[in-house]
Image (cartoon, rainbow, N blue to C red; front, side, top):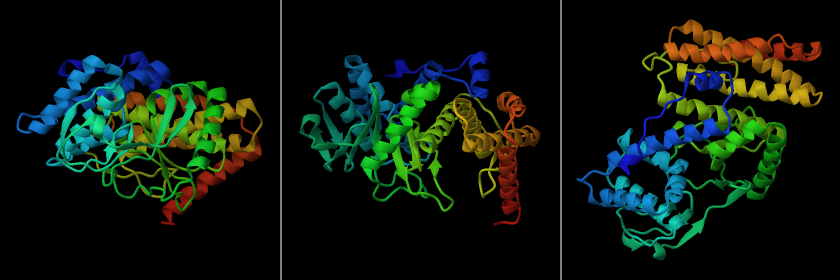
Length: 390
């Protein structure tokens, strides 16, 4: 499997296109491939000779790769695997979880490939990544003897299937606000409606979602309304609360796509000084943000502004006018904060210039006076609340 590791980059043209909000299916596919190589490299580092169970599981992965590469790809791209590998390696969460993690990954691949293998499960196994929950087992077991139940899944289009939930206990970071008892039928209905809207009116966003996302995890709404979150090491999963309607769900998905693209770009390129610990105002948060969070927010709100720009071109809508006006201004403001901060690397400066230049063009586009006033008022009120600590 080591031979599958590759050097990943993007061309200058693709980098600049991404900075301005572009991308598309092929670029998204390349970004997923880059993250897959990172995940595989992490797993390889975990499979040391000092850990026979982990080494055996990794060797099984190599054998299965020759038999059914698509099965390996699907499991390695699962967000559970990415977060597992990162937690075990970068966060020092080794010990019993490492071989257990690798055995579960190998078991999931074997089941997908229709191959029976025997693996050593050194810790209670409860999740088979990308597949479902499994009755806890410790010790040696054949994959055809595992009793597992498929995760519920939302099928949005041919080849677009998102697993629903499915996280091992304790793997996700604290404070996400996971929904306690999400109504699967309601979620499926709302996601299907959002997908139809995106596929019809915003096909590039839909194409990127099809490549970048394979799972959805419901959150509870926040104190101020809808909630969404990004877990960078869990690429492939969108974390969000149930939106009021298809349009709001669609714009949340569009902004999560930008988070995903930037997450992988930050794997590939140093965009800012990681030692800079200053905090900055963000027009979409009640708390000050570090450079990484501010950059992510600017890029995500470029997507939001772009979404509402397209919505208002399709049909007259006060909501679209106001949201477009508000978020183009907010994105421009934050891009300037970033450019003036001195925290960006040369590549980071180039990337943020791309964001700024895109919204600079949008700032010249006319918005009905009443909607522009509303957007300006909302921005001012947010700044005032933040300044007063409210």
